[in-house]
Length: 133
Image 1 (spheres, rainbow, N blue to C red):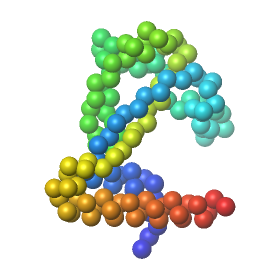
Image 2 (image 1 turned 90 degrees about the vertical axis):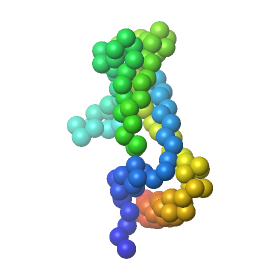
Image 3 (image 1 turned 90 degrees about the horizontal axis):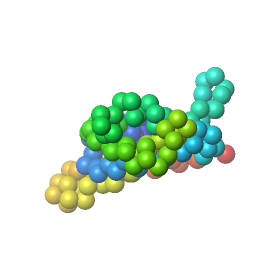
Image 4 (image 1 turned 120 degrees about the vertical axis):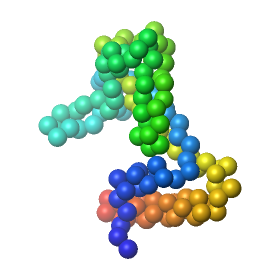
């Protein structure tokens, strides 16, 4: 049995009965909690410029496709634009994924798929824990 990879695990989520909640966190470009090192060795913000997103939005509403279920959400940027400077603010998007309990109760195959996903995720975490020490 091959070791699971992060990309494989994320890809599997789209076929499972899950509920996805988009969590948006505004941050300043220099906030160290939201920095990632790029291939160029420089630090870059882990998010999207509010000014760039505002240009894409129509009447302050951004059409955003979340990457797990591939559903399009309409995100109202106006509260962010009223509260923060678009030139210095970035938005970080993260996703809370939970099982769709209704679907799992109705379909035993869905429950087994979710349980198998949990076992694969545990194997991934355990394998990475061993290599990080």
